[in-house]
Amino acid sequence: EDIMVEHYPPSYAWYDMSITTPKGIKHKYAYNHNSQIKFIPVPISETYCLTETEYPSGAIVYYDYETYSFERRKDSYSMIGTIPTSNSGPPDFKAQVYDPIPSYYIIEGQEALLSTISTPNYIISFVKSPREDSECYKLDYIEVIDKHTDNIIKKFAFTYDYFRNPNEATEDYNTLRLKLLNVKEVSSDNSKAIGRYDFEYNDTPLPAKNSYSYDHWGY
Image (cartoon, rainbow, N blue to C red; front, top):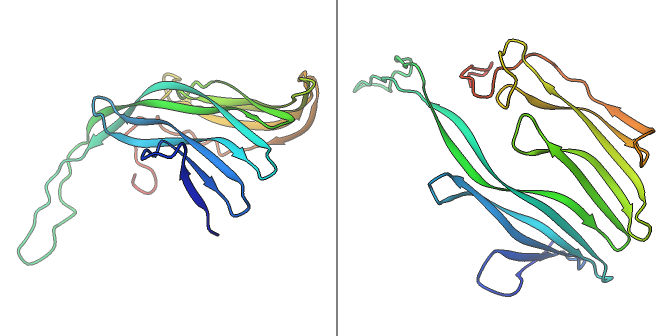
């Protein structure tokens, strides 16, 4: 199906745009942020956030975000070796490869996390809290609020733990991995569970994120 893409307000910049569907629903997007390798001012990613949805009836849905700055270390390593060649055949890829040389770089930028969705009658609120395995946040609750009474009419709770490795000496960003245990609909005061879905996992211990271990496929 054909869609219409426009800038708003009309300009040469791509920072704000709208997409209109054949049914006349217009979605507006705003440029939010980019990320880059520290000290190298060239974006490696750019993010656009949905800010409004306007329907032919005139109803508008608004999307609001929380933003925060971050710096993340990315560990890497280089492999150096010798690959003998011959004049009569391809390189010998079974040649000697030396021990990896560890290195790292820093990625900096901004994250945008959806905080509310607002319709003419309701507000959907996304409640978050910090994670132990990342600088980002985990989603704790989704609340549906009646705008006319301010009452919570639906609430969904998320329960977490972390994948841990008993062989690691410390528990930190590099050794912990977030694990969703269950999702349940609860009463507005959290005193009663209305429905619940539980998740089970393979708990085989995994190496630290900055480990130079190889997986089954050699990565």
